Amino acid sequence: MDSSVRPPVKASFVDSNDCCYICHDTFGSRDVVIVRGRCGHRYDLDCITKWFDTRRLKDRVCCYCRSPILPLVVCSGHAEPSNPYLMNWLLVIAQQGNLNELEQACADHPTAHISLYPAAGDEITLLIAAAESGHLDVVRFLVARGADINAITLGPWDKTGKTALMAAAEKGHCGTCWTTIRGSTMSSARLRIHTVGAPCCQLP
Image (tube, rainbow, N blue to C red):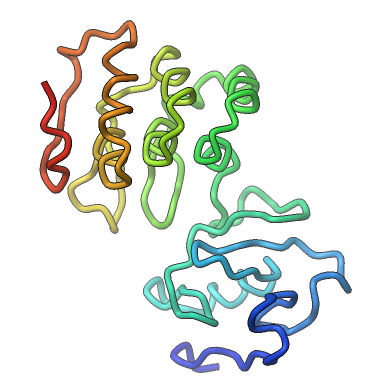
């Protein structure tokens, strides 16, 4: 099927999204892994994976609304963590601000707080994920654990890279994240502040 043409969608399912937009089968009728894209539309993971595997990177968008969709987040079911289109579960926890789960996960995976994880074509840290979502308790926990506050995103979509503060600034959380990081045990002199494209990070 031409990647420029979205699959036909049954009108009765357009609003409720009770079916996969690719195979058109209702979710309740099958035992499948259901995923949600950045746009909010849901798919059968197997369907969307096969759909993306046949398309170029720039064409991997929601086949209903044509909006950016990656990374996918699992809504229900158990998916293989090796699927390249899924958001890492640790990133999901950090973005949702689930501190209890993150504390347990970091205890089980000692290098989790300093690792890079794939997200929408880039690689980011848990600290960046938590900062851009405004979860200060998670930010505080990760900084205290030794997360690199100067780590930047890496990848083809983010040519210059951004720190946790820059990510927070883009979402309007810069001031509170700065207060949280500055109040940590780390010396504020070690903090490298990037202000390009993030004017609200003109900090004392």
